[in-house]
Image (tube, rainbow, N blue to C red):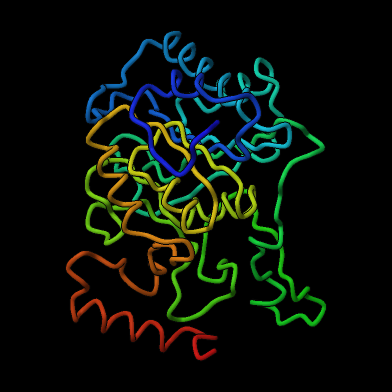
Length: 305
């Protein structure tokens, strides 16, 4: 019998092998990108073939534990995006529903090429005809509604594009001047959302979109690479069961503490619209920033509701 709602310390492949076939509804993985980043207890700088073999091994286990109508989302960088898409489709038999580009602010600063400000999100399903896709949970206002005032616009809005430049109006409940937004910057070191113990942290709002659209309340959400615990935290807030694996004992302890501090129904953390306000930080915002925000809000159309 599987025990959910926990983070388990250990290697993800061994952990996945301990699970029964077809027990997971949704898997989200943000694995090491193999670009030499130093984590707590491991340094990912494998040879290409070694990295691809390791990736194939854990992805095989992910597919095995997914239910027949299960969904798999993979976050990956440029270096291996194309190879892993081919691997998932041709070798593992997944069907790709969407290749999403997540555009983020606070991109990686480069000196001899354009700054990187995106990651790849592959939306894969086990069965191309049977899978969960809760379109109404992630609809956003259309340009006809927001820009043109067209009476023909559907009141339900539309599905997001597959390039996620996520703006204030992309909130599932509509735009509000005081709401968190779907314009996802990376979780920078000064942000209040930042957990502080892990260098690569996904925004809660991004995981919120994925979990809402690809699972239902009570479904089981899996993250093979616990990291900062964002997938598990968002799953708990959205009333899903959850399970994660993490190699680092210190990260596991930090994730457990994070999970203990939240409850089902809690709001997701998120950064305010960067063009309107500065992201919330642990020490709050300066008076100057707040004044700039107030001025910007006064000049924006539609801010008065």
